[in-house]
Amino acid sequence: MGWYNVKPLFPGVYQVMEGQIVSFFLILGSRQSVLIDTGFGLKDVREIIRPFLTNEPMVVNTHVHPDHSNGNGYFSRTTMGQVEWEEHGLKWNNSTPRILSGDWVPSAFFETVGVKTRLFADFEPRRYDLFIANGLPVPVHLWKEGDEIDLGDTVIEVFHMPAHTRGSLCLLDRRRRILFAGDTLSKGGPWWLHLKCRATMEVCFHTYSRLALLAEKVDHILPAHGEPVLPGDFLTEIARKMESVRRSDIRGETVENYGGRGYYYDFGGYGPVFAKSVAV
Ligand SMILES: [Zn+2]
Image 1: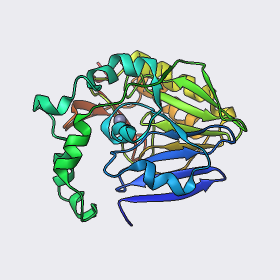
Image 2 (image 1 turned 135 degrees about the vertical axis):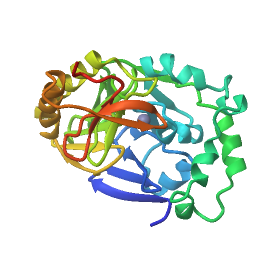
Image 3 (image 1 turned 120 degrees about the vertical axis):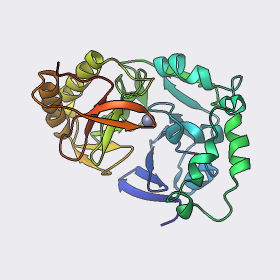
Image 4 (image 1 turned 180 degrees about the horizontal axis):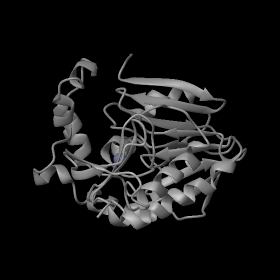
């Protein structure tokens, strides 16, 4: 396995798996193609996906965390949710390069054991830091709940799903019946809903119940982490489990990671980490 692996998952849908850490997705449309997220951007992502392109893709970010948007700089047209840009992205755009503040060194992550061994030989941490220092390009469009992106032979429906970040999007390919979930849900580990950029718990509960309403339109869910393809009825299952968290039927266990302290509600090897415990 190389650092980047491109794999067709469905007709016209490619998964780009990066470092076995994160996935992003190319959807080919007859008139317009979209790239959902751009990964860490360690290499020229446009070049990685070029052999599969039929027209120039527009980037749509699910959210701006570095493993989903650092590759934006390789594309001329990037877009994201309006709330995500205003609340998180603006702090990190061309005029406010975070790396110069000294509190965050992007390449440091790639020096960690386990990640470093999987990197390609010619990875240059300094060049990567300089690339990231350019910041996020200013989006050419900001999406809102209910917007539709016309690809020609299908339509992408935009859903604002605040939880992991307050501006996160989930995107539904209407014809293919595929939901691109970003970091809103996954199977294979905890969902970080305790970060600074999080939505409140009440908003999260509302988000997951809204997701359950989409189940009838979804055959497959493609999250950015964990198991690559989940069945549509996973949406109803997690809404049911979230409801038992809300009613304090499940107890959270304290966890601590670099995102801070939180309470993990184990749904069976996956589930939410909230900043607060529900049980009193
Ligand atoms: Zn994230």
